[in-house]
Amino acid sequence: MTDHMLLVVGGRIQTLRKAAALGIRFVLIQHKDQFVPEAARLAEAVLIADYTDWTTTRPLVEAAHQAYGFTRVVSITEPGLVPAGRISDHLGLGGTSEEVAELLRDKHAMRRHLAASDNPEVRALSVAAAEVASAQDLVDFGAAHGYPFVLKPVDATASLGVVRIDGPEEAEAAWADVEALRARTDLQWGAFFTIGRFLAEQYISGPEYSVETFSFAGRHIVLAVTEKLTGGEGFIELGHALPARLDPADERRIEQAVSRFLDAVGLKDGAAHTELRLSPSGPQIIESHNRMGGDRIFDLLDAAFGIDLEEWIVAWQFALIPALTGRPVPRTSAATRFLSARPGTVVEIQGAEEAKALDDVIDVETTVRPGDTVGELRGNWDRVGQVLTTGADTASAIATAERLTEKVTVVTRGATA
Image (tube, rainbow, N blue to C red; front, side, top):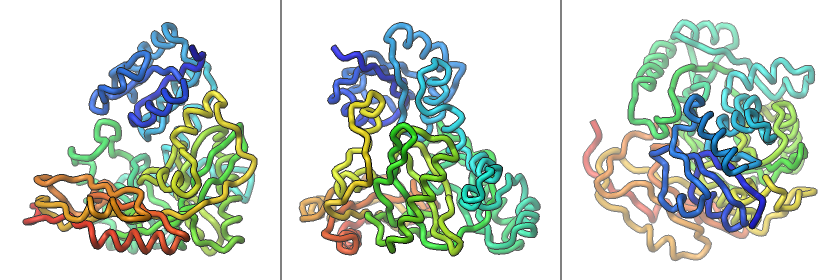
């Protein structure tokens, strides 16, 4: 029997399947709303608890550690990253610390950390930012740092609540939207994220990219730079494609910037997903996470490079994969485009099964069913599905994905109130 014993904090059932296939034994701590019965068959034990509540989690993981002797802790889900770091620190297991995970979760802390660096190249990766608590704070930030600027939650995800402020006349309405967002009770991941603090930060102009990396004992390897298609004032993600079509010099600048950033925040091991813009003054960081990217970018990465990043995350805990010595070479290109629908009640989904059968299609996913209600597109969670494709080059993968968004239709009737 293997000596590899892992504690998994939250996450997908697919992670657990991959850990089991590698011969890794594990204990799972999972929120009751996310529990899947299959997990009980795969795990040595399952703890059902709100793992974001340290008062509850601490005695449970202490007892599980004594009983099962896990030696590493991992999470691939956003709300589990800081708890995983806290558990690792508390039990002295090494791995990514709570401090590093918190720096990446808290966007204001990340900005302050970069601004305080002694290295001017690190400081240049960031922009001015301040926590705000009123419409007047927005006006004051604009007066101090200019327009436009971005208003966003300090620690939310999926582009939720991110808006661009173009002048002082927009401050009152923007802050009213903040208060309305705080009052919502229907948010996905509502059990994990409370919309509280807000951050104003200078707007970064230029094309946007995400960068998938894997760090091997402090050595950061860029796996792929991904193009991003955005909408809704440039913050809602409508599509991704990789490898990005970049001038080699610009790609090298991005690679160096991300490596410099990960060094600055102290990440040593595992996956990271870093979002940036290539501004006129060089690459500047928007945000980063010590996990693989969402929006099924990991499936694009697997299709293009043959890298199962989810498997790597659990395998690297026990050095079950060799450390890369250089960037991988893509064998194809891949893209995704997201599906949207008019607000209303879903009546029918057309074309999805036919599209799945086409060449160069990885998958067609719809996240709504007949009878569901579709609202306005306010954030990434309001999208209704996605198509994932491959192609001989990035342009052809994108073209196939865009054709499919015209073939796959979510038909709605009526309008939401």
